Length: 388
Ligand code: PLP
Image (cartoon, rainbow, N blue to C red; front, top):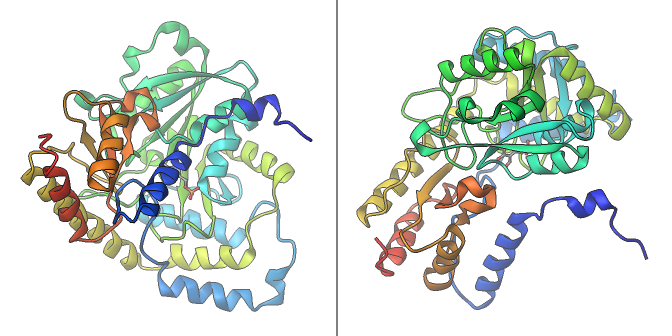
């Protein structure tokens, strides 16, 4: 019998596992659960990407061990993509690393460039999996609270000098999971200045890259002058191309950080199935019309959900991107007790804000991953509870 290692025991509990368990228990009672809790894209991968993958799968050269550090043609396609979409120049070999999904890069990076006892800054609320990197690398955690009054952008002046002095690495994520907030060029400029002044590496998680609403296209961190001196950006195929199950993404930017990611990949991983990398090239090289259609769908759903929520007196935070709505909890409830009440009494599942950290208390996250009329029905069921 083997016991979990001490490091493994320290890993944070996967809060989505609890959410799924609660939802399944409710479904088992025969309830018609409207699931607004999950973050799994509901649309299929565009056909042209699936076809590219099928054609490549048949080719024997794609059945062998591939280059550890990924297909050079994919790195070139990623560099071309950043040039075309964001006007950012990248050296395909030195400034891009291919990842088996962006999560793996985000989790392994602290392990690659920090030493036990170093300090790392994470947003609160934030994507829970960043915490796995903190535990695996045995580093100290300092949180940056995201407040609604600051449009859920961190205020660096709130950090104590001691924390700033010790911090070596910081994570950011816009469009933001869970709040739906988007970054401004001014904020990213402030971030580069702060990082340079204090020698802090920056990782911008651009998982929801193109998903911005109201005609505003989210900006890349790498568009900020000096960004490559201080950090990298991770990009994923999971959301813009509905390829979450395929497990592919990349990191781009600072050459030293990219080299560190590549080194750790050399030890832990052989690159993604070559046929998937070829399909990823097709996705990046495409005219992006499937991405525009998808963004339009999420914007339509956001508008439908906001309308339904407002009609029952439930006022959302204005989500400018991602596929989430960040909703306040009524007086007298915590995010968890409110989420439990909705599941129990209305058979509506939402993600409690505190699952994303203490800074998420007072909110729940709604995923815009189902179609009307289910949003309206969810709000009608919630209206019957007379909470607003
Ligand atoms: N970052 C954020 C903010 C996410 O929400 C997710 C997935 O939900 C990821 C990263 C991980 O994406 P990937 O599928 O590329 O591992």
